[in-house]
Image (cartoon, rainbow over all chains, first blue to last red; front, side, top):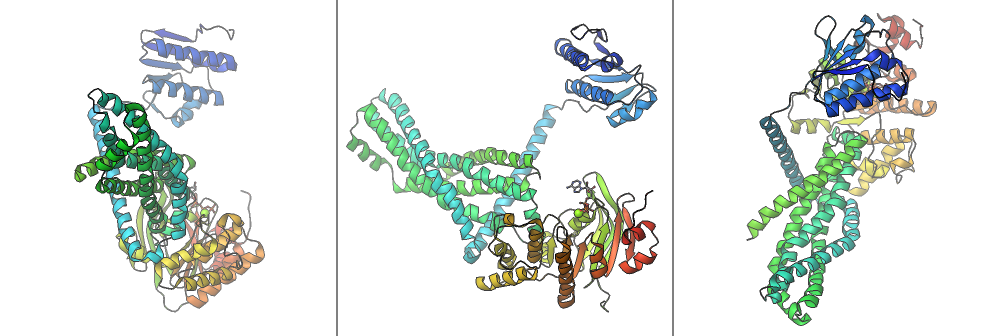
Length: 378
Length: 254
Ligand SMILES: Nc1ncnc2c1ncn2[C@@H]1O[C@H](COP(=O)(O)OP(=O)(O)OP(=O)(O)O)[C@@H](O)[C@H]1O
Ligand SMILES: [Mg+2]
């Protein structure tokens, strides 16, 4: 049989069952085997196969090839939820099949255990909710622990690792100013543009400054700063603590009775809680500048008018609202980053996953917290 | 040895492992107060696993571990934290805080649990580093040290709080023979002066005969303790042939 030949007689379909003769496939060179795989894949994709029968007649040796063929093809079928039978098994192969997870059903038929019963939607939703519940519980527990540690630190400021805290403030704060400025400036521009288009229709262009000022100061600046800090700080915290888990640094401390949260988490929380409000104020300024630029250019309001209206519309209380939000967000971001780090699996992949998941959960938590805080403030 | 035959650690019918896989099954042993107790066995036989279970890093599958009269498996967290302040632990991998200098690493537990002012804490750290032969390295970061030096620094940290029990997982691995012997001396000295109970995993036969009051030998195949007792006695007349060969450095082709 030539390698180019796509019609391989060893693979055929009868009704909804695919019959595969393994011996000729395995015994040939790599090209033929490859061809056979492609053929099987082709059948799976184009026809509604329900069963597969793999005939092992003629194979008596425990070759690598047999194992490789069985394992890879069977995984392929399982992925497509097709039931696999294996027949004509030489006694020498029994142990291989057991090893690969097949279960003997009759004298010569092995069936791979299939756990593919598709889950009902209720089960899926239920499990997901339970997981979410557990997740939230552990998060709240962690936040509680951190808050009590924070309280302790305030009473014993000597024990705060200020060196660490300053380091994080430098890294997340000072280095974050340009990006925060840019993002908030653009946000202000966009808001002013959108506002002037919509409000211009009703001749209310003069109020663009109110819109931009209030939206940026009460809401968007704190939100944008959080998004930047989740990406810059939250994920870094998760990765850092995750790496410490991998190298057993945390274990060593915990088993000596040290509450590691106090010196691993607290400096980070303090750093973010100091830096994020400041960044938020930078964002406020940037956003209003952006709004002014577009507002003045687009609506024909003079600079003086725009300035006056902004001062009139935005009160000190609004600024504090945004700043308070940013402090809460800061605690949430630092906590979720650290928690994900603590929960990380102990390998390189685990650290990556922790970083990703800290970002995802961080965004979610920020949005929820923002909703709650907005209701409280109004 | 001590006349007061108090068992500071009492392990009963302990089964340890990871997830589904059982590493050691139904083992029981005890550690007397103020003795040096060694755990021996081939590589992968579960020595580190025992240490991890004793220190509460891993939870046993079944069985009880009683340390200082407290059932550590079923105790509340609060009490366990209290208890653990009396442990010093040196894991096989050392595990210093990579972001802190050596002296900060050692000062950390002291700052957390003592009321000493900072300069006192740092001079204690200096003394402890000196004890393990690392004076002059106070300001080094862990990654600037060799493996053996990291190990010694970790030992210094384990001793920072003057613990009641020291768990040491291969403290002398990665040390040259002279430093290894020095470390043995140090362990003995500590044990003599402070009466600290030491549970040590080691492959160094010299160390075992030099420092250990009692040993247990764990085995991978049978998942059990092959023998226990005084090392020099076991060397001569253990009931188990493998143990005798192990202690006599004999390797028999089977
Ligand atoms: N985190 C882990 N997860 C799963 N299995 C593990 C884990 N750590 C160790 N093991 C397994 O447990 C067994 C015992 O390991 P352990 O580290 O206790 O050996 P050891 O006696 O300390 O060996 P060594 O002298 O080489 O340090 C090994 O077979 C190992 O494969
Ligand atoms: Mg070990």
